[in-house]
Image 1 (cartoon, rainbow, N blue to C red):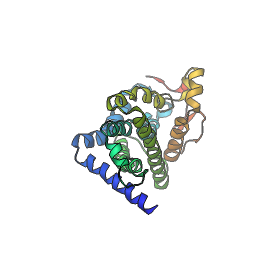
Image 2: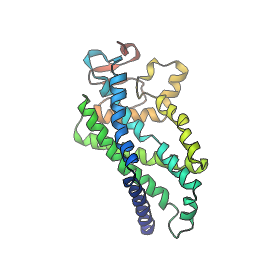
Image 3: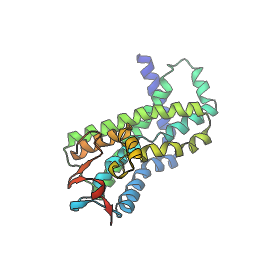
Image 4: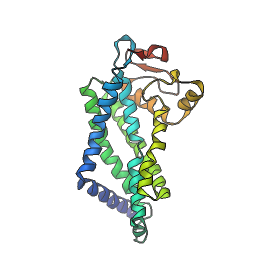
Length: 242
């Protein structure tokens, strides 16, 4: 057991070292949260009105945390690249625990993912988002998001290993993105058609987003398809275009 943890730590260090020597990857990892907050907070937020003077960004930011955590594309592409270049086969030939490499990659993704979440939170605070509950709940939300990202990374690595081609894995993002879009990240599901709402309400991603909102904002946690923000309940009839 100790040997497996040691091997996993070495694999995580490999991933972090690779990122440290790749300025473009660092820029993308840290810059993406800023871009998401600006695009969705200002462009979409300028078109969606929350009644009672509420801030749409308070509704949006927890969903963006969850969306970022669910992004399996980097791990999927990285594993497909290592598989196609024979790196995975070389690791299999070494006297290390079989779970060391995927565990290390998932741990490394979670570590630099925490940096992204903190930066996104700071950007959100700068544009008007506020944490309605205490620091303890905020830390709990951060831990939950990190745990979700750790689990999602395993899914991405498995898909990358199955695909086995870096270019194909990169193009597969078009199949992953709708899963996060078909939820209550950007708008309440009550305004969707009945058949689409049935999927959006009961897919696993929607309750996860509501849990993050509940920890950060004190809203009801559960698959209710009703979002309560600081200004009051928000339904389809109360969220409209300006």
